[in-house]
Length: 118
Image (cartoon, rainbow, N blue to C red; front, side):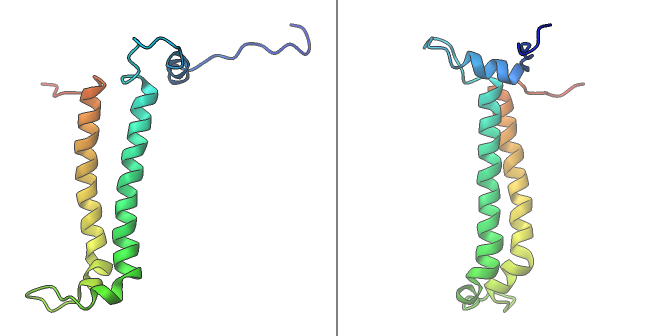
């Protein structure tokens, strides 16, 4: 090995897939590449976290005074108080189920569906 000459680096499969998607061949389908899969996954995570942030921080802290003018029927609790105490948690649980549905759909699209072993 000569000094000053770098050795070639090994490329991991996602990076290799990313390199192959940069080809100018328009007939190549890049929608099933690992890079596209993870980009869509991060989009889902970012979007769902943004919804949770808006509900927990926005409704529970920023807009609590405006929401407190509305009371929950049958309980008398102000809506802003409810969002600060329980609404954020309920929203988080619902977002977990939404994430599961979205990821199952994405797995089937990229043929990564685990299916049921039986």
